[in-house]
Each structure stands twice: as C-alpha cells, then as structure tokens.
Length: 139
Image (cartoon, rainbow, N blue to C red; front, side, top):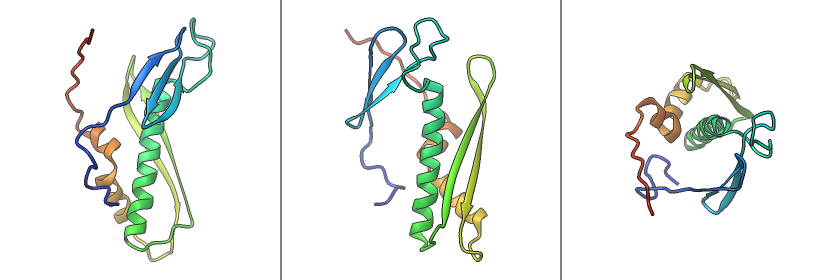
C-alpha cells in the first residue's frame, strides 16, 4: 500500500442527526457517534465532540504515517503514541501541538522519520494548506 497515492479522488462520509445534539456518522461503513457533553443543552455525552474527532483524525493519521514510514524503511518501532492538543481561539482552533512518543533503535534519525511522516499524513497536510469549503443545499 502506497499512502502517497490516493486510492480514489474523493471520499464521502454521511452524518445523520439522531436528536438533541447527537449525530451518527457513517464513515467507510463504520458508525461513529458524535455528541456534545450532557452539560450542554441538547447534549447527551454519548460520544466525542466534533472538535475531539478532529484531534483524533490528526493523531490517528500522524500515527499511521509514522508507522508506515518506519515500516517502509525497515525500522522496527518498539513503541509509538501521539497526543494532539488543539488551542482554542474563540470558536476555532488556532494551533495544534502534536507530541510524538516513539522508541526506535538508536541508529534511527527520528527527525528524518518525522519529516517523512509529515509528507505522508493527509490530515496534517490538508490543515497546513486549507482547502476551499463549498456548502450546498440538496433537496
């Protein structure tokens, strides 16, 4: 599998309102629940908030990119985890911090591995150069 080449030119997920502030998302045949905390009127706290899903997308994609890049180079990782923190600026994030914890053989240059992963990670690349967003209403 070559992560540098997309399998298709478009991807679509479908979100369906489930009452209150709860949403069911079909993503590649997997159901993801998104909700607001019970402390928010209409929220039931039955799933992560959309902003947490955004952070999860960054963390999971960058983790996959690191594992893929290491594997492609024949590097056997002993441990790998990624934490992503978003900094709020009003109703949006204005910054993300990606903290990588990785154990690899001593001869591995982690800076080069991370730079390669940055080129492979679709999510961080998308956020680094934001795409145009079109909103259409379909009857």
